[in-house]
Image (cartoon, rainbow, N blue to C red; front, side):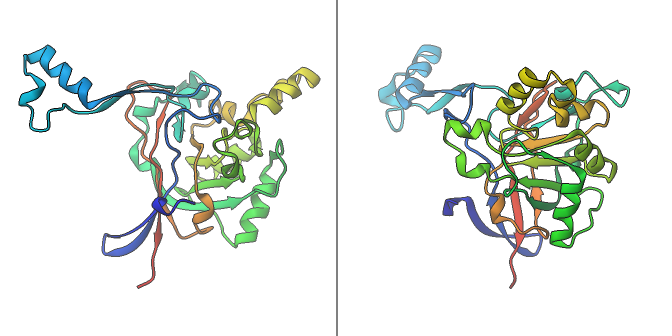
Length: 268
């Protein structure tokens, strides 16, 4: 983990360590449809002001304008939250919520980090797997907690292998968590489901619709949100941290980028 991903601040009367749980948004081999970021230079900024207002660059305090970027990217690029609308047009018999309709309170809560990095790529995580990991950390889930799965995909970020790395949740695992009051869950892998190449390969072999993105399609039955492409989950304790993962307010969006942060209490 980069040391810049950690900082210590005073917050609400307590010292906490801030752990950056987010991926940078930019071109990377880990994204099949990588973001495209076009720089706007300081010189470009000066030219714009001259074009708009007739202000010549030489009268500007630094002789240059302001730099910027123009981005073209999916709302599911980088670390992001999926809204129920992403999974299906309806959930629990009603129109599914867009990302700007999900209450912000849903994206703040105690973090429960479950280490599933020993499970092989392509493993379908079951409710029994989840229970085993909870017993391993001696924790009973409570409503409002945010459950994060550390698959180990972190290590493959920046490579093409990331897209096909890690285990993923099955329908029953997702629904069992939602039934227990978990409205947000997340993963450090590309998807909360098993890797897409694994799912595609199974379809060609088995033609079994129940194996097609069961974690996502579970959202058509019970409304929930999930986070994908998280980072640095190994820097969080299994329990005891708080996660903030507010999505950008994309109007009518099926998802949105998140700057996810873990708050870890620091002893005085």
